[in-house]
Image 1 (cartoon, rainbow, N blue to C red):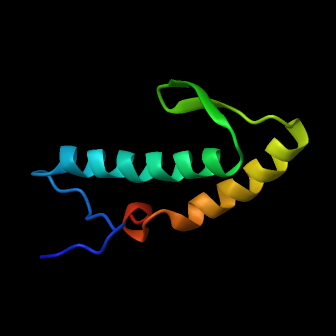
Image 2 (image 1 turned 90 degrees about the vertical axis):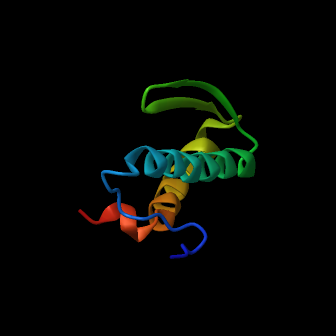
Length: 82
């Protein structure tokens, strides 16, 4: 069974760890892309949070709001269904 690039299977008991690794890889690629687009840098990560520096405060807020919406649209549908 082949998977489309960027899509993730629903977690199963046999491969939950593998699915988690792939979810983290997708999330990291999205975050890294957004940070690079706005010439930012990752300062620190902690658990499920992160601190990112973007030079201009107003630009950072505007971009952050738009990028959050964009990122949510790019989350694979298989991860949003329960």
